[in-house]
Image (cartoon, rainbow, N blue to C red; front, side, top):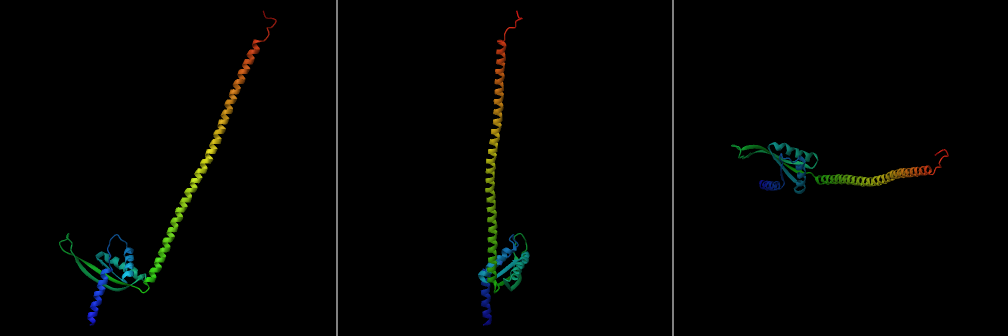
Length: 206
């Protein structure tokens, strides 16, 4: 009877493992991708099985150790074996080592995950606040710059206008002065000429 019960339990465990198995590979995905995935699986299934082949065994061990050290999981079972892989490019099949680690979430898993979620929310809020402050600062700087450019432009136009008016005034005064001087010179010449014409004949002449 006990053997039958153990067999049923093993069948249930195997069925559960099929649904929550994570195959860790040496892909470009970082270690914490698999750590976070394992957390989600434990939230859903209470357990997660991590497996890896060959050179990826070191990665799967690292994932399990991170979860255990953070108090999120306990090691329930570990199994090593070897598998034979068929490779069309090779004449002989390839044999690789395999490891399977079954982890179960701890009693305070949900509490730790809630704290982590709150911390992530605060970090996201702080990051968004910094981003908003930066954007607002850039917007204010741009607006102040536009105001400054406008003010400087108006000031420059006014100063240039006053300068141009002063230069035109000086030019006008100079031209008027030269014109007046010329007119006065002509009048003087005419006056001298007239005096010369009407001057009396001296007695000794003739």
